[in-house]
Length: 467
Image 1: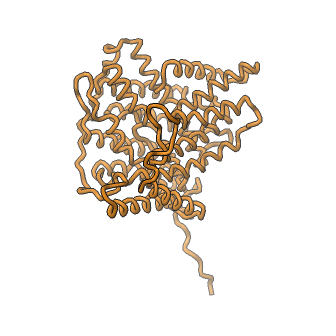
Image 2 (image 1 turned 45 degrees about the horizontal axis):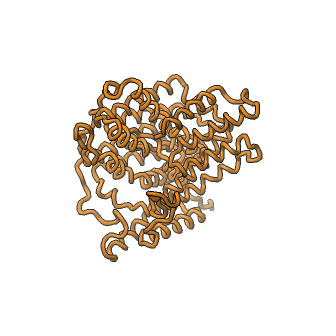
Image 3 (image 1 turned 120 degrees about the vertical axis):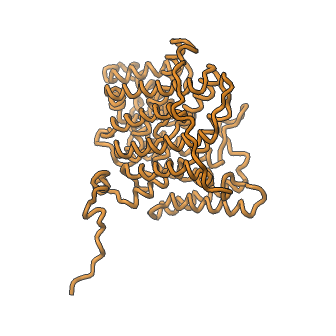
């Protein structure tokens, strides 16, 4: 009598067109892992649909024009969805894009409020910066600079991003705050003894236990349970102690595409050529290294890097990311860049661009169901980032800590990211210190010429005032 056998997994034994295109089986992934990864990435990024309009909306420009909130929700979700899908199709990596935090604040408070640009002209600056980045990718300069960074600093970038997203998770979850007007740099939130903290702790424990038990979909399960717990609390407690976690009065909302294509390019006539070039270069430096560092860290976490720590798809990744800046500016959503929250999807098992397809489609759907997307509280997504941060910090173990020439720059890279809330600042600090220490040791010839040039640019970047 023949022995009974389990049915084979057709996604791996008989690769279909989807499997072949995205190389799901070849990368040791599965359809389920990619779908779960895409869902988790979207869940941890969904806050940008509300946060980007809150930063860009409500501030009048020199012409007293204020960007419409409904239109901002539409373009934020639209560009994020389109560019995330493009990244999945063209580069085949699990790296989602959305409006970059920091750059959108630069647009609002430096370009519009500080330099008195109109909103269309401010978005034009972003388009110009994106075009410059695209040219640098096409000539191979961005990839060459990435390859010039020593392996120890690359590992420090990944570990530093782990610390950075852990801090983001703690801040978003309402556990720590950045006090205003003095005091400690980072302190426990005034609302630490709150229902929101309970939701955060419950979600964190569920995520940690399920991850430790290797349960598929652990982070997504934890986020869903945390959201349900928050909704239950809001249902029984007075008021709404956990923000957003209430069932919306309506689920559907009509998108408004009125901001698409409104960017203008009058910046140089308004502030002059010198100041205009300075503004473009400042935002360029932030985007340039933020995306490179994030892409490398995600690629390493997803086991997509080669034996030299390089990401074979880096050129395609940076090409799409550069187009994301152009598209974001052109749609008045601000520059779109790779989101570090994509590491949450990778931690869930995503290794291919199929996860991006899931995330991107959800962003596009969010244009129509933004009230429903908005019920996920940050207290339920923050723990996922904390767990991912714990996974990413392990990259620091491979750094040659006995060599102070790499240890000090690597440490500076790691701590500057969370302390200054900027990946680009951490990358810049590490590169500048690495070059200066090499000069002091009489080892300038060991420094790649491109790295020395980048170090000089970062000195200018820090002295000028960063994004």
